[in-house]
Image 1 (cartoon, rainbow, N blue to C red):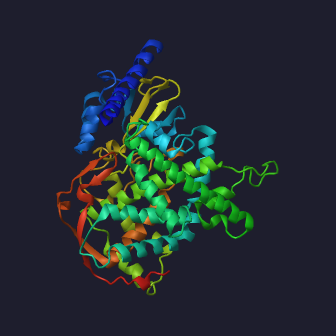
Image 2 (cartoon, one colour; image 1 turned 60 degrees about the vertical axis):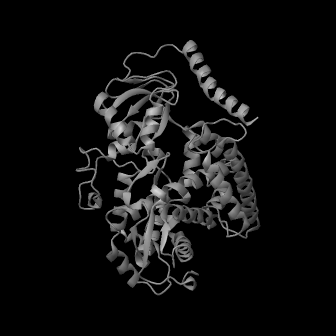
Image 3 (spheres, rainbow, N blue to C red; image 1 turned 180 degrees about the vertical axis):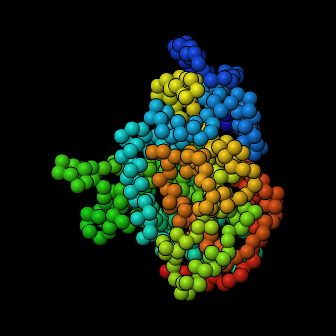
Length: 491
């Protein structure tokens, strides 16, 4: 029986895109003139397998650069069954970020698991409405009051997971930490059964996020769909609880992100707003899952590669801040703003290892580029930040780790040439939260530990699947330079 299921799955996986491809050939007129140079390769396959192999071998940046060297910064190819235009460079980044004719395109598996009303899928007024609501909560003026909460989560994590241990694997621990920060700050979930069930559902959900979207028994996609349904039920109950607490006056919209989103009304401050909720329950749940997915992995990856970086976070900066604090006193927003050297290390880490390798857009209409090339309606566009980040014309000696590139006195890079957080109206709304979370975590790490790579981590290798993951989760040996006491972390 299992063999039959596997055979059926393989047939569906092959025949479905083949049918779509043949149908498209019979109904879609040939693309117009002025297509970019390049080749679409074999039907369906195109250059997909070649790119996936390069990602697994950690040579994807070289793969992209070879293509650019051959065809230039604009070229056509075929990825994952669709004709594609690869765009590279600051001007291309600007076009991708600012053109409303290029809408986001996520893998079908991602949209099905996260939900179709998430801001990554929305366009136009819907996107501006939903993203604007999230951005209001995540703006610096709001985040400054939550530094103490993040501080408490970081210190509790280090006391429980790092203190007293001779060695740890960094990436798995950083994922636990970022999940705790999100559960506390964004969802307002106390430690307990609900938080544990959400964490378990989320872990299962991630397994099929990038899988082939075949809803068949025993597939990763089916398991992820079921896990997503569990997570959504938990979040729906949380939304209803937050709404009831607000109505009863026992909580505040500023308590957490979900409470804030529930409290928003269409036309706040206007006489004709009608008092309708600004976001539907579905939109709150879908975008809570987006925050969980994006904030969990990207921040964990940044922290992990900062620990691996050849230039350790500046000690002096953190010693000076520590001397200004009483024992056990939490960090403040003002303390975080003083960590300028550490944030430069973070920026250089993001330049060299952007967590997101690339993303797709889809052309809603024919798009003519500055060079005269045309992206036909319905084609997809692929852009990758690493191409710009490693361009020697922008960053001198780009393979060298130099945080001084981001010094205040240094000449800033051209617009749209540092795009680790995206750009334009779709720039990551959680960028400031990532900064605070990163700086608070690194402060306590460098104050209490020294570390060295070990157990295979010395090879300094990682693969993309599709996010960067260091070998063995980056194992490090620890030296404890200052004690961590559990009673110190009850702030």
